[in-house]
Structures are given as C-alpha cells and as structure tokens.
Image 1 (tube, rainbow, N blue to C red):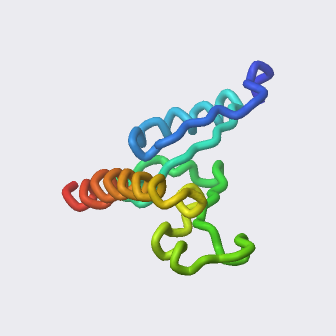
Image 2 (cartoon, rainbow, N blue to C red; image 1 turned 135 degrees about the vertical axis):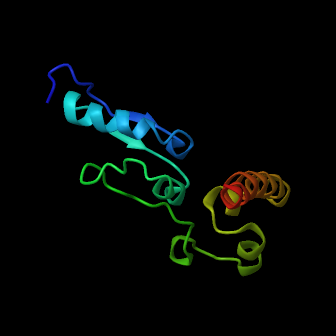
Length: 118
C-alpha cells in the first residue's frame, strides 16, 4: 500500500454514466492502494458495455425499498400510492407526487427508454 494513500475512500456517484472511469479506479486500487465507494443505478448498463467490473476488488451492496417490518404502522393505501422508497413513502401527498413524477421522468426516460434505443 502506498504510504501517501488517502485516509478516507474516494466517492464516485453515477459511475454508469462514465464507465471508462472503472479502468482508472482499478489502476488506482492496484498501484496506489486507494479505496473507493462507487455508486450507480444501472449495473446492467455496465455489464452490457463490457467494462472493467473490478473482479475480486469490489464488494457489491444493493439498496432496496422499505419493507413492512421496518415500519411501525404500515398504511397499505399510502404504500401503494407512494411506493416504498423511503424518501417517497415518508413524504406528504403533494411532495410525493412531485418526487414520483421527477423519479419516473428521470428513471424511465434516462434508464429504460435510452437503454432500449442503444
């Protein structure tokens, strides 16, 4: 390990948008002993692009929506209308509508439709 390596990990978000960065991350892990926290929303896009998946150098964690055991009093109608993503479930109706609309526009347009076109 490089004695000048950073004490804290480097955080990179949305790595699926610049998949080539994974080659650089790989090099920095191997040669400089740096540590990274990589976040992204589309592992499928990375795998399809045949990019460096850092085999054996990375642990994968997935974030899931809330589950009923995490909530004291689940309101089924509220859960069905708001979804179980924490930021959506915990918002009021108006805020949730705005958040869900933005989420659907971003996710559906950028992730689902764009993937189908490429």
